[in-house]
Length: 311
Image (cartoon, rainbow, N blue to C red; front, side):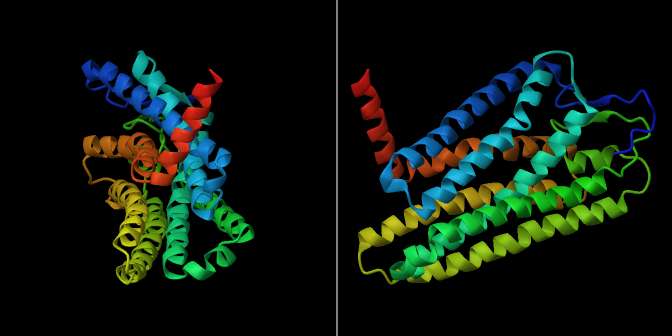
């Protein structure tokens, strides 16, 4: 990210500054979503650790997803709230770079982690007798490590190319955060290589994982339909359904934001998509898993019951 002159100190995150009357409304909404994200994901992590019934591979990966969502939102939302609260819309050069690296890292991490969670469900439904031997603790840690390191590799690749852009003194980023598409639009000169890298990497991190997930769920559906018990089929579909909802929410918004041409998509629409996958999706993930999962609801009731007894 070439700064071009010695006075360059940072960027201006425009957000919705062209509609100042909406800033306080957005501040309240985003703050509310962020607080729900913190409470929901911390609750998932807490009950997964405290309830022995949830010491299974599925909840190990769900805890990883909750931890990821906490870091994902915290890398961007506090800066959004600061910029929405008052007239200062700036973010330092170092802050922008840090946000870019972390956001890309955790976004790609979630792409891979959702594949890992689909594999876990495939083994649980299609190979139930071998589930615990296949998904043993060592394998679970290895798969989680692959997800985190794979996301880091994506971040290093995309961020390195983005840091080579020249902005010719331009500072106004027409977005809520420092992300690759917004920075490409801000750059002067030829950005075709950056767009090609962005599209190539994003196509890989969306098409390959999403295709793998859909194929695995094809096998899962076939296996579930063979379960003789209606209750067994319902339980399997509920568990897998929660994961599929999260998959479509995340991949749908990511594909729109990153795979459309960087200079032709509607910027206002792009801003709201950015808010959706950076604020809304991490908030609804724990709600989806909690509301559709009897084990999680039971563990939560048990935890609340113990807390009331201690009062």
